[in-house]
Image (cartoon, rainbow, N blue to C red; front, side, top):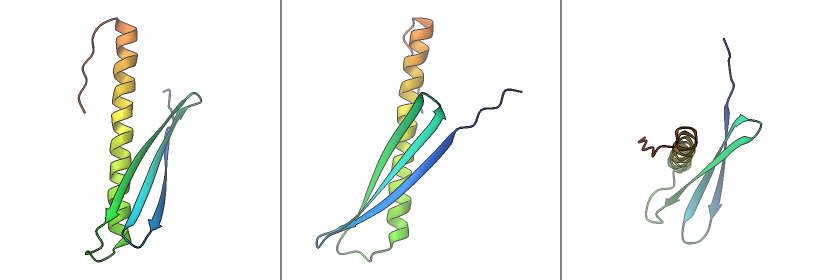
Length: 92
């Protein structure tokens, strides 16, 4: 059995201003020595809404993971097209 280990590190930071609270999440994938991807996601709290930081964290992380997923599908499509010399269409 040839086992591989991939890891995703997620960093969340918050920025507060007079007009809005913003949360940013970065999801970094380390797959192999030369394979690194980073997805970004953002969430903003409407000033009229009650501030619940966990909700902003969840939304920003979900968006960062979705961005990371999109990048992996694009990389896979490109790799398959190079290997097969055919047009590849993958969907998520």
